[in-house]
Image (cartoon, rainbow over the protein chains, first blue to last red):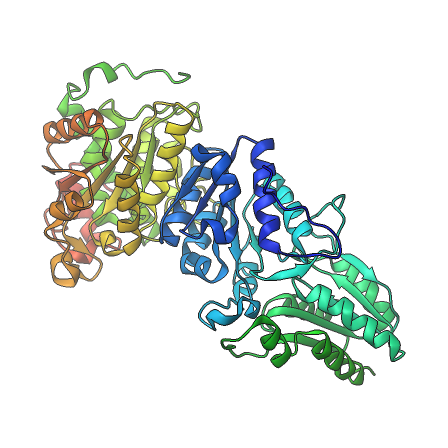
Amino acid sequence: MSSLPVFEKGKGFPTRDGYGKGLLLEGRRDPRIIALDADLVESTRAHWFAKEFPKRFWNMGISEQDMICTAAGMASTGKVVFASTFAIFTERAFEQTRNAVARPKLNVKIVGSHGGIMTGEDGASAQCIEDVAAYRSLPNMAVVVPADAVEAEKAVHAMAERDGPCYLKMTRAKVPVLFEDSYRFEFGKGQRLREGAHLTIGACGALVSESLAAADVLAKQGIEVEVLNLASVKPLDRELILASVAKTRCMMTAEDHTVIGGLGGAVAELLSEELPTPLLRVGMQDRFAESGTPADLYAKYGFNTAGIVESARQALKKKR
Amino acid sequence: MGLPVPTTLAAHGSVDQRELARIARQIRVDSLKMTFKAASGHPGGSMSEADLLAALYFGGWLRVDPKNPKAADRDRFILSKGHCCPGLYSALSQKGFFPREELWNFRKVGHLLQGHSDLKVPGVDMSAGSLGMGLSFGNGAALMGRLDGKDYRVYVMLGDGECQEGNIWEGAMTSAHQKIDNLCAIVDYNKIQIEGFVKDIKNPEPFADKWEAFGWNAIEIDGHDFGEISAALREARETKGMPTVIIAHTLKGKGVSFTENKNEYHGRALTEDEMKRAMAELKEPWP
């Protein structure tokens, strides 16, 4: 399809573009792929698939509980079903996901667009900041928060190949392209995007590129930061994190999500059990945000480059 | 088609009604024994649905093969009111999906038969237990049958109290909007939910009108009359372009005088004394 975006380094794309492109490419590759959406087909970018494969796509209307249970029934016949809507509205069907999808381990891939406070002007009702915690708590469920559109696209392929349910969280707004098209996403594998000796920053989603920019700033101040992309929040790349903090002896997480139970929670659980390490979690500090532009919100809540630089300096003060 | 057509399929409804009654009686006996041995579970709704289950599984309606329980072409039976799995497990064991000895380990750790119906059990087509999800699940399976050009049908058993769940009506809108005519919903309308009469807690009436307003073909029957069950299932099968719901008027706890029409037996096993009396009424040796 000529309108499909090409994700070039140096440009910015919403990670939902990566979902839409990945879904279409998977649809061409695998006839088992089915897609559903709940009246946000263009917003989630499921419309590219819907246009090319109208017989394998259903707009379920504003009925998220119905969508998830229908997806489960479809998956029970051997299909691989992607069900997308805004991240916050996937939570409407959380218990359906728990009981009709996760418990019987059906091949339903839940896709939440417009994740985090980056959703912006629509305000706190639309800014999903607890989905990673919720889905991470479910047995059988994998959770992916891609750092850019390329990783989102490649994650769709890995999700289609994986036997069992997954949750994919995406952004409404543009984030810089970090990966080449040759990148391959693997569950349970993170990437060391930058090496450093003083502090490890483990990030996911839009905060990966912010963390990389912060590392540049900190390097000029003589602070060498190691930046890990931890898009696969579950399963988590334990070895990568433990090896990094064995060197830096100080950890910071950064995510557009509450600090409770998401990437920060997952890393805290890992470190406290395996290698107790000073830790600072950047994220929403147990509060909701508000309306505003993504840039203003990121500045106010410390998610932009300057905020991460400041948090990194605080994290280093915890180092013993 | 990979599935053998049951010999009775050509003669829907002409199966000996005494044979169906014998099977339904066994479903009631089994449901009471299973829940008694487990000291928990849901006998009341298993007894109200027993005749419907007997008709579906033994009246030639469900094309299923115990030797190939996951056959792609099989008809699906979705027990959305998953707490009434004792009745379903009894029907499946009588059909030969698993040994009858499994029934006596219902709800016991390390055993097959979970407290609410579970896909791990041969013959079970949905993991249920939380109400309101089965109609949408059935729609999904039915839509895939249509997409793949398969002629299987999907039957979804709903509870009446369950129809208080909004998810049911989201699913009902989808069935009608998508003209899913290879699906038939059956409401076990036994009038009782866990805490009392459905009409007192949140009345679904006018029930048939609601389904019709949602775009369904609604049929009301006596859910204990095999002739009416068979006629309704035939009408559902022949109705094209819209889904059909069979509102089956039943009696909670049907088959034992003192359990009938009482919410008390929705979710508890009989006592030892009650078991003696119930088995005597059902002419079943006990203990």
